[in-house]
Every structure is written in structure tokens, then in C-alpha cells.
Length: 54
Image 1 (tube, rainbow, N blue to C red):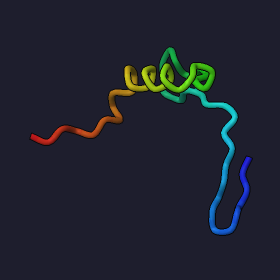
Image 2 (image 1 turned 90 degrees about the vertical axis):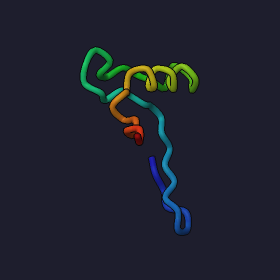
Image 3 (image 1 turned 135 degrees about the vertical axis):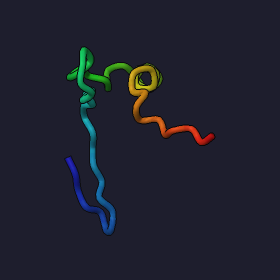
Image 4 (image 1 turned 30 degrees about the vertical axis):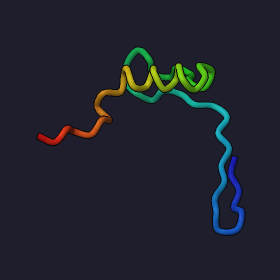
């Protein structure tokens, strides 16, 4: 759901799902709580980390 409030677009997110291909595809993440969801994401989504400078 979304609405425009002045110059700002406000959205309400009700559900969050994993869209990464593989066994976790379609898994509902918002039921985990913030810390578990963050740990889940960090442990599996290694390709979104910027490359380290040498």
C-alpha cells in the first residue's frame, strides 16, 4: 500500500519474501524477526557485498 504525503511517497510493507534462486526461493522472511532475517540474508547473499579494494 502506498500514498503520497506532500513530496514524500510512503509505503507499507506487509510481507517480505526471498527472491534469490535456490532452496530458499519463496521463503517468507518477515516472520523471522529483524535479527534472524538479517543473519539469514548475510549468510546466504554473498554476491551483494562490494569487492574489497587491494
